Image (cartoon, rainbow, N blue to C red; front, side, top):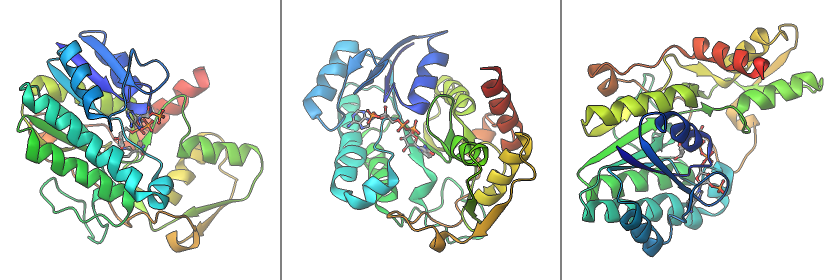
Length: 286
Ligand SMILES: NC(=O)c1ccc[n+]([C@@H]2O[C@H](COP(=O)([O-])OP(=O)(O)OC[C@H]3O[C@@H](n4cnc5c(N)ncnc54)[C@H](OP(=O)(O)O)[C@@H]3O)[C@@H](O)[C@H]2O)c1
C-alpha cells in the first residue's frame, strides 16, 4: 500500500512511519523533523497538492496541535488546525475516493460517566482541545464516508516529552511530587497503538474505534507504578485533586475507553502495566 502519514515527526506519527515502512511505501508529511514532505494541514491548497502528488491508497492523520493548555488559551487556533485542518484532509481524500484514518482523543468525552466510554457514546467535550478534536471527528464523518476514527489516550513514546519522563525526572532530582488522583484514563504506548492501526487498515472496516492499552488508572496510580518499577518505591507522591493542579485546560475526570469495535475484529492491546514495563526496559537499554 502507498500510505501518507501526517504529523510524521510527532510521537505517534514517527512510530507509524517506522513500523509501516517495513511493509508499505510510506510518505511522511509534517512541518519539521523527519517528515519527507512539508505540510500545514490548515492550508487547503497544500493538502490538495500533496494528496494529488503522492496519490496514496490511504491517509493516516495523527497531526494535531496537542498542546492542550495552548488550545485553551487560543481556541481559534485549535479549531483552525485540529478542526478545519482535518476538514481539509477529509475533503481532499473524499474527492479522490481515498480512505482516511483520523486519530482522536478521550478528551472528546466529558468524563461524567462512572463506566468506560463505548465507541457509540455521545461526545461532549469540556475544553477547547477536546472540542477541536471533536470538530475534526465530525468533519471526517460528514465529508469522507471511507473513514476510521481512532480515539486513544495518554500516549507515551520514546524520545519525546511525556508524563513518565516528567515523573522520573522529578524523582531523580529529589523534587517533591504532587499528582492528581481524580483524573482517570488508559495509558497507551505509541508502539502498541501504531501496531494496532497497522492491523486496522488491513481490515478495511471503517468506523469509530477505541484503541488503548487495556486497563484504566488514575494519574496518581500511574505515577506510583512508574516509580515502583524504576526503583523509586520509597519516593512519596502527594495525592491532590485535579482542581488543585491549576492549568488553563481542565481535563475530564473519568475517560476510560472501552475497545469494543477493535476487539470484535481481533484487535486488542495488551494491559498498560505490561507495556509500561516494556517501555522502561527499552529506555534502560538505550
Ligand atoms: N499525546 C496524547 O496523550 C494523546 C492522547 C489522545 C489522543 N492523541 C492524539 O493522537 C495524535 C498524535 O498525538 P502525538 O502525541 O503523537 O502528537 P505530537 O507528538 O504533538 O505530534 C503531532 C504532530 O502534528 C504536527 N502538527 C501540528 N500542527 C500542524 C499543522 N498545522 N500541520 C501539520 N502538522 C502539524 C506537529 O508538528 P510540530 O511539533 O512542529 O507542531 C507534530 O509533529 C493527535 O491527533 C492527538 O490529538 C494524543
